[in-house]
Image (cartoon, rainbow, N blue to C red; front, side):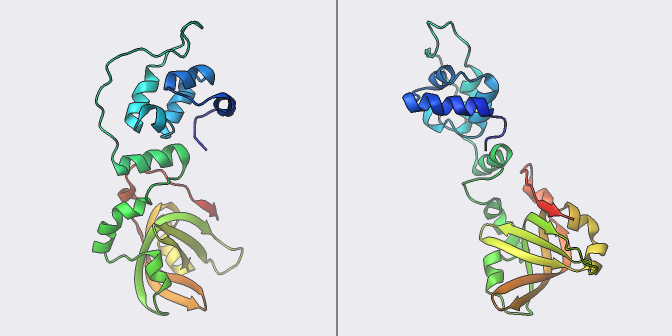
Length: 226
């Protein structure tokens, strides 16, 4: 899943690891025969924590790995290491998405929740408990847009936050009026009304708000069928 890591490099890592654990970045580079691109991908993916420490330290260390003569291959040399600051939680999450497409840390919206609360925007979990017909505001990262092959012009949008997913129905009039927000927003807020049919809960959109700038440099992807 690590963007930039070659399949051949990954296979050599597994083969070398089966024979013995790696004890340093230099040992990893030598025994798995990794080039600078593979090493940089691993460092940026936070895969070298046991060998190098946090991301910034790992990126610094792999930048100094050199191809040595066979007699010295895998050797390490004492040198001063700069005291680099550890990445912030936000920086870690952005790097996870950039290199892996996901994060095992907190969801990005957990970091923005206080700002969303100030706008009276609730979570997907809150929506699941909201009575039918209640006006509400919800926001999330757009993870899917689907337009059925019908004449109704309806678009279904799925928003994801730190508590789950919210299904949004955007009827033609709203979609036509706010086409840019509908198709381009990566972080979308929806002002609308809750509709419940048994266990199925949707939000009928009345207004769409593009909140993408709040994501900063966080890369996201949506599965769109339109």
